[in-house]
Image (cartoon, rainbow, N blue to C red; front, top):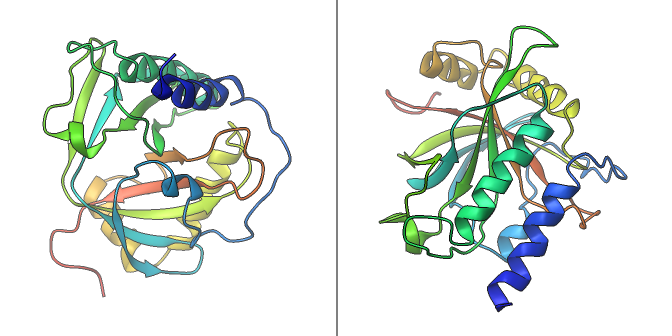
Length: 230
């Protein structure tokens, strides 16, 4: 097995096999401001911090490229993310039109469009950040599609521990509450034309074998058309 496989295979498979494991809750005690340690080891998308507020952070991400699954219908974020991971893992291992292996990056994100009821299926799209060296011509693959982000603003809340089907909703609601009555809330609503909690994204940075200093994030992306809010 190559050095690539020796590093990437345990990282992805351990993440897949442990998504249901709650584990000890090693929270950072903060909702923003922790630089994900994983990004010191593998490539992550670049961003600038625009503002740190009470319980939230506003970031501006540079233009970036993501490889994404088709929407996955499921009741469980954990199960849908696992399904998406397998597709993306096969992709970076060479199951693409070019037969090309691709370096692992972080975070892997899951966009959630929640259902109208607790027992209805939601829609989940799982995405892998494409390394810079592959962004000009990412290998196509059946069942996956490329998303090209222009510079994007994101409201962010961080949380520790392991992502579960319960805590993601709680953290998204907490982010929404922290943004209430701010200019950022207005910008998000204007950008989406929706309630701020309707669509959000979960970003996961850590291997499940890392119990301390875990960093997960809720993202609410939005566009800024008329300049930054005051």
